[in-house]
Image 1 (cartoon, rainbow, N blue to C red):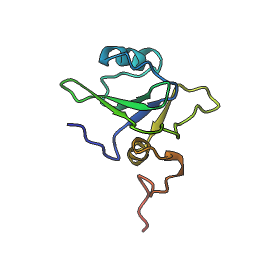
Image 2: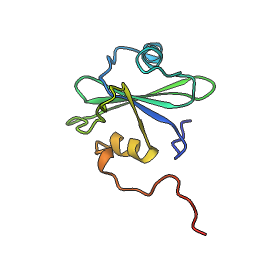
Image 3: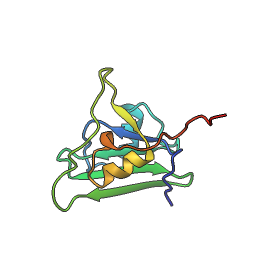
Image 4: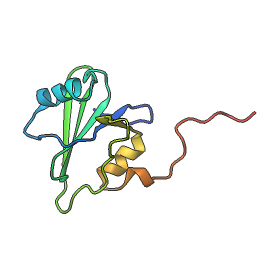
Length: 120
């Protein structure tokens, strides 16, 4: 079972991915294009070219999970964009992924920081 916590590392591929690829093809994208290990326990989030579907790839220690969400109407309007350093992936927080999965804009979400020092 997938568990989404504040400590879950979530990486989003900024460029569209061919959804004819299965688990092995997306693992190759993680290794080659994203320079990440798909066995690290992080979630890897991809979208198709038309922005009508999202796939999440995760390894849970026994095998891979591949989850797909396809919009019945409309598109995922708010997808993270590349930064000036030319990165191919962007890290998201757990609550930002939840907002992205419902079609919202993760950049405009106001939430408490994941960690903050305790006052004396």
